[in-house]
Image (cartoon, rainbow, N blue to C red; front, side, top):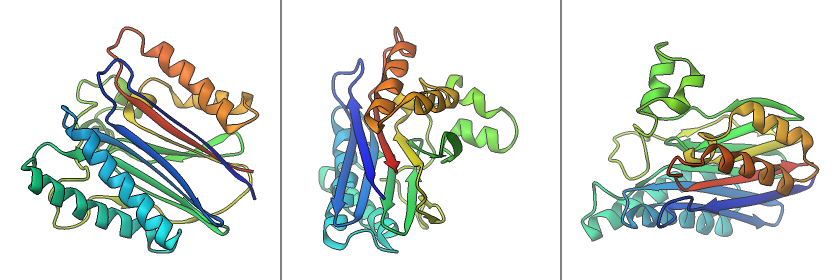
Length: 242
């Protein structure tokens, strides 16, 4: 088994980048984290940095264990809420978060907000995470179709993020899956996936000989589709198991 990856993060047309991406290896374990900060005026980037830094610190200490994902989400939430209170910014410092862990036996991920993880097997899309957003809620109750999310006027209204008070956890952790050669994963913020459809993700995957080439091909489509739209920060992590 060989794990290769490529990270991307760009400010787009904004004055600063509130997205954060991290990738770490510890022996035969890997972790990948991606966050899209909310709040503006540099508060979002503080939030996204806190959760991704937490993911790295826990991983470098323990590796990818059975409880890694849940532990990171819980500790990151505590760290973020503590910093909010310290800075008196409880209503402003929030972030989405996607976390992926890989070891020799299994792959697992968790998410909160509208940043996504896509899972591909071979050259086929298997599934992607479902957003915690107003448009996704409308899809769930049958009022709109999934293809309508990208153009929906409320597409940026997220319902669950890190930094919100919760009595029970808002994050979702998927069931672990076995490692299989030919698996590919794409983690990305809404600034990325809103500007590329899933069919184009698959087409780029079929044409690419490396994970770097895959991410690069998708980036060009994202940039082209976002021209003239006051492009948001956009970030992605591509991961291949071959």
